[in-house]
Length: 137
Image (cartoon, rainbow, N blue to C red; front, side):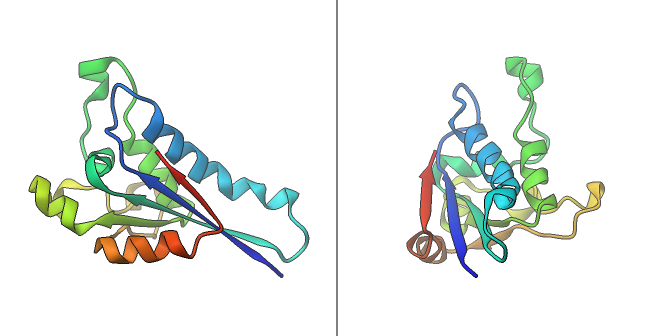
């Protein structure tokens, strides 16, 4: 039995580029690869928000109003619905004056029971170091 650890690190702004949305999409789709694995093999994925990337997990995004596109808020809730480990960098939240109240921390309204975690950058660094595959967006 082998477990492949995947780490997705979102560090770009949520708008005017597709990079952050692609990270969320890849993290979500990583949960479907089990059909290609040997019996007993697993995939364990995490997604971390650092730097400007913390703006991807804000509540009440209004991308439709300002840019005519859907928000990453729904994507963020889907990662929680799939029980992916979600890490948000505390130092970057402090730098931008954001608190837990500003963030998508759960998907309870969709029936999810997983919560995002606000952690130090050191903990995110450890997550990256233990990953078999790492994607920065």
